[in-house]
Length: 565
Image (cartoon, rainbow, N blue to C red; front, side, top):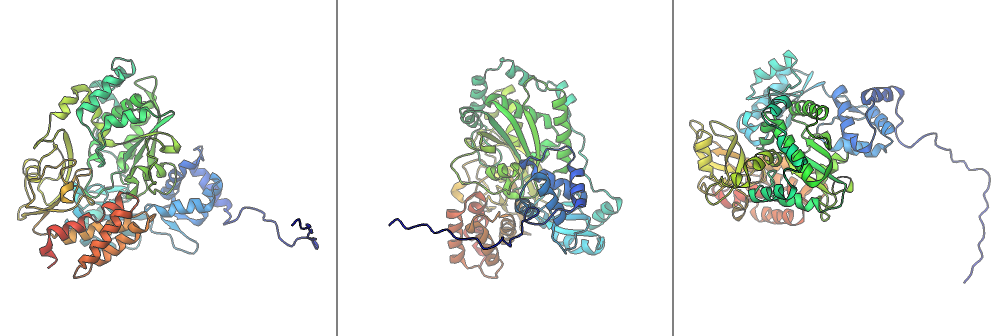
């Protein structure tokens, strides 16, 4: 079976031309010069791709094909890698060859549920004619200002309780940047005893085990929605081999949620000290703070205060702190999708296991926390775990920050005992319902937390209390509906949001949300088909977006059958 090898003779020289450069679009000299000027001395490392895309978008109000090619060449990345990231995020405007660039100024009108109830659709109809062709008016998913509904963002400047006239005046005045309101800066925070607790921990006056037992005794759970016990998470990540990293999630994109922004705008160093204590306890070398792009004022605030913290460190062993900017993708609120985004990639959730605590950022063990969880660390360690646990109603323990919006007189962030009921929350903290409105229904946990009728107003609002009813509290985003609203309309709004925000990675979520939205737009719902679709999405979706997206729809079918008759 040993056949002879017969060589193939080469006849003449090859006619194949050698490429003078890499495949794909060649960057122009002008585009290269512009990109290099924007990036300056900034590192060209791979995980800074989204940051660099923001620089180009901010400067030119879009991403041209020439600039994308230049950025790929400058960062030594394939053009496909740059293009797929740029087109994944909603806040990047990719302009292909031959396409017209969008208007230099964009006005985003939030069409989330709270804003829709407050008149967002009327603004979307009126503003294009009032502002003219030089301004682009587009609908936007929740911008994290539900208590200010209807919320409009002119460039990067938010307009609260917006009217068409106010928006026009803001545009004409050129108010397109958001400057933070007065807040407790580092000097004021330190003067009031800030960072003394951190110093005591680092100096050994507060041993790790004592700190951990206090955290565990408080019952503090992850306040981004997952509810994992904070103290246990510290212990688990600390047990992993170093180096260890930390990722802080401030990408609160859940419609109805704005608590993190509320606290950040007022007392940023309380959060920063809690973050640094957690980093000390777990042995963290580098911290990444992931902030949603819609919070422009918060970004300016944080950048300044982190710089002050690094210039005047309260302890000698301060970890490296990096502030990373989201780009308008709700899915990046999911911890593994957020980590992908921090790494400069599309924000697509990872399959698990392995878990983030074991294999997270850059393949290292990673402590992931929501902003508010860290915000409470100092108070808990100062006052004791029992102080936090002593609050609560109806058999529940702890405090919750409820983001309340909708048909109440006084919307906003309400710090209330865990386990409070919706009726108690409305009457004691929100001034009751709006005049002329009768309590009809509520969403206890934002878009994905389901919808309950007013008759179920005695359920304690806390972790684990709503699941038997097909709902959950999540980040405690409470949206209140009145007899002027319908649960069907609310569910349609939410499903269209999920359709818009699906990352597209898995078919059950990508196709399921679109199919559900189309079926829910019909005059008569096909209940057996919707039930089948719901089950498939729950069973087969990779992450919580697809798994929880059917909740509002299922709740309408279960609790509001009269609306479907």
